[in-house]
Length: 218
Image (cartoon, helix red, strand yellow):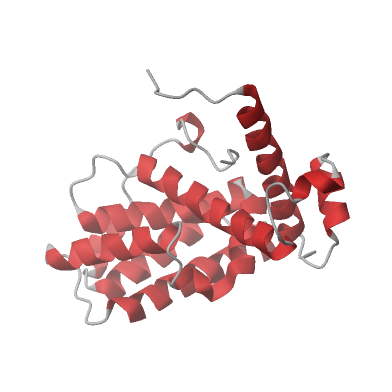
């Protein structure tokens, strides 16, 4: 049993904060970062004064909204890569799933796009997990990487470029495009083309049956 169950006041505060974060994410996804705080609170259906019980500035809210999107994606990827022994497959599966999530959760995907190449050095969400997986694969002798930070820049650029392409070309097969990019990354990181192709041909977990999902906001 938990030591402390949240009170009704704490639950209400958490719901209000989550509503503000969701509203901010929607504006970020639409590229409307210059909207006044009043418009954000109206979209969240909370009072103007309530905003300042949670955030000091709009910029602070936007930072929380971006970090939430990163952490939500990251938590989902952790759930979907549990139990894999090969760190190269862990990296590949994480990238393959990320590519598919751009279409399934376009709003959060656009929040990541707004964050841009800072994604490569962020301490939240996708970046630390990708770095962890690359380093694990290097230690296991699966990847040959001389500079992890340079590898991360390449991976982050691939994530963002793929997301942009899939949003701009809705007719493109997201799964096929993602797996092709993943194969190229695996080859770049040290696997043979044949092994990269084999790993990217393996079945993926069902995104519709996971307990965690990018629709949840903490």
